Amino acid sequence: AAHGGSAGPPAPERVLFPPTFSVSEIKNKQRRHFMFLRWKQQQRKEKLAAKKKRRKEREALGDKAPPKAVPKTIENQRVYDETTVDPNDEEVAFDEATDEFAPYFNRQTVPKILITTSDRPRGRTVRFCEQLATVIPNSHVYYRRGLALKRIIPQCIARDFTDLIVINEDRKIPNGLVLSHLPDGPTAHFRMSSVRLRKEIKRKGKEPTEHVPEVILNNFTTRLGHSVGRMFASLFPHDPQFIGRQVATFHNQRDYIFFRFHRYIFKSEKKVGIQELGPRFTLKLRSLQKGTFDSKYGEYEWIHKRREMDTSRRKFHL
Amino acid sequence: SSQVVWSMLGNRQFCSYKMTTKTQNFCRNEYNLTGLCNRSSCPLANSQYATIREEKGRCYLYMKTIERAAFPRRLWERVLLNKNYEKALEQIDENLIYWPRFIRHKCKQRFTKITQYLIRIRKLTLKRQRKLVPLRRKIERREKRREEKALIAAQLDNAIEKELLERLKQDTYGDIYNFPIHAFDKALQQQDAESESESDAEREEEDDEDVDKREFVEAEDSDLSDFEDMDKLETSSEEEQEEEEEVEKTASHSKSKGKTPLKGPARRKRPYIEIEYEEETEPTTKTKAA
Image (cartoon, rainbow over the protein chains, first blue to last red):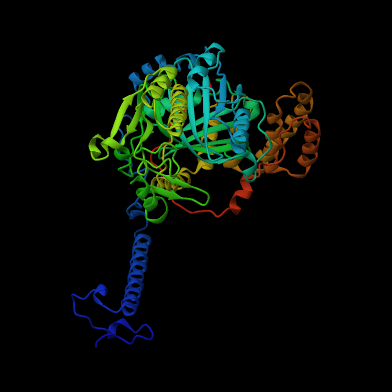
């Protein structure tokens, strides 16, 4: 009929189609595929031509050209969260002055951390615990040995620990983290993923030293994010030793918290070089509980409910 | 007729309760006393039979007699056993008083086993229960993908460097890093030979001071290394000698001061994904010091 030759791509001018024709109407699969590819090529050519024209117009206008359109990113399109903290909010400031971390931020308490695992930890988890203990100053690793958490917690409080970290393990890899601030502080339960031990990090530096690192907390915008951020901040002693030039970063992006540990050096006042040491992992908050760890009777401040909270791709909670 | 039943079910015909394995035959009948498929343990092939069964933590003795073989509804007679172990054994004895030895014995054995596992259940429920939560594959895959995308969007290195430079600008480090900001700016803006020579003279003076400083302020290694780094921008050859001296002096320290961290130039070799993001909102950060 009026279709061009099927051997090579014929010139489009020779082909005449009825105006309501669409490529999907052809019954023959090979032919349909071929026509579709041709249509795609045509679209691409048109798009290129349009781009070129636009660029020429922009150059022609010079200074008067309209500003470039900002591309949409997920962060741009994020659904506005009403619990976003305004830096000048007094209520938030007052709350933070009186919550469980106030003694830490007033420098009344020195953080002392207990790191432990679930029952019978396997090699990777043990090594990860040790490395974490070198990263966090003033921390101690203890073996679990089948003890109940509810009995451990009063003992920890008696021995002046301020924080408890439990690393949960599944099939020989750590996959969960419970961070509990001890004198009746909030308990956060995270899912941990992509754990890299020190030897798996490429181009890493030497071991982290005993100096107290600085802490960077990025992108914790909402109230919930703020409380989680303060929890992380309270793990590290308040006065970082700048001589050590080490920095621990908790970066929140789309509800995933990335932890990195670097050593930095200022090459000039506009350039800084960083070198990664120490383990890295990512956390995703699963639940935040008001008191210390109590899964049955605890008062939950926030739980991740999959059906309600995962419906929109542009909505984040931290 | 129990003989007939057994000759049918036991060997020749099909019995739906029978499970065969390589070494043994098992009987899945819930009234079976031993659990094996035998002539003496088959509840269908014995017209006089007894079992122990437990329901919700209480044990019952079930009995079946020939007289009631015609009434399936009333076939099994049930007796609640005492909670006390010895009294329950006496109860079994008194109920099965003239019954064959085999059944009596097996009943008592079964009852013992059941009480033992009930005790164990009670003990275990007092200890920590482990809750097994199933993973959902689709969700795991989705989370993993989202995490990767978030990692790319985060641009961690840039963010950290930016934050560190911010802190430097806001003077949180105090006097440790003495970048003479104003002199630098002047030098960049004017770009005069005279100003360069002047700054050179300044640097040389500072180097002389450094020579003295080393004795007193050994802990402040970063100070000196930063000076060196700045000097690298202008002069090159002299500094290498000084660097070597520095390295010897600070051999005890485990950090590599003079070398630039490999992260900088080596970073380019990674497959660099060019994604243009224009971030409008600045990350709200927490400044710890001061």
